[in-house]
Length: 263
Image (cartoon, rainbow, N blue to C red; front, side, top):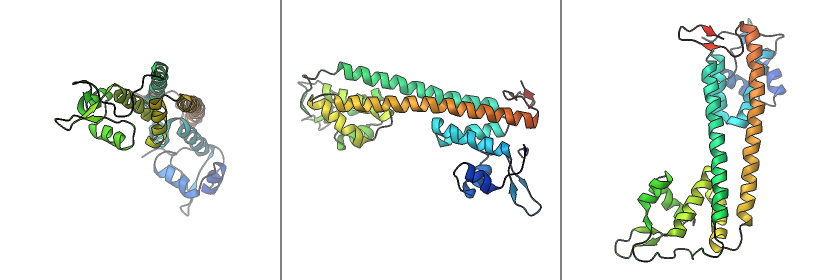
């Protein structure tokens, strides 16, 4: 069972909740989930919190902004059970994902620069002869399921033609381009209904302003997430230091193979 930690004066659940704009039930839920250290109980069974719990809650909420709710919860649970190295690994994974998002953003920007505004064929334009690719190979190239491409077709993102002999979908050059662009934007967190107008604008070669606005918004969100990660890191470091003062374990210490703390 996790060791109960104390620091400073006593706080009621309502005090902790009001300080962070939460309900008392949310605070209790966070404790039960391991996001907060275990609280002491009064003789009548009421929870009592401390400034350490307030610090833990502040760290968790800051981490949520940059990492998301589930990763932030996993990070705090790892810290509270003394597995600090595991928490660092989870943080590294989020930073790696953010870096991947930045690379994807650059890839989309490169795709936009490569779009020729006067050469896009009409939707569903047939490739000559046996030109084009089928749904399976294209899905494999993008790392998605064929069903996803069919869903994109229903949403109007791609317009493959049908092979007259087999009835199979055949994706021409423009369809492949649209599928790649849709895939990149989906990875950036955009919904199909947000992507469809962008694809339509690119396809019609009437200008790239909608896509440029999308990219600017994506840039802003990536930058905001990066800054939120910095804030979360600062709050987590403050919690680790206060926790270390109360347990006698250095803020950066983890556990070695023998279960003992290591600096």
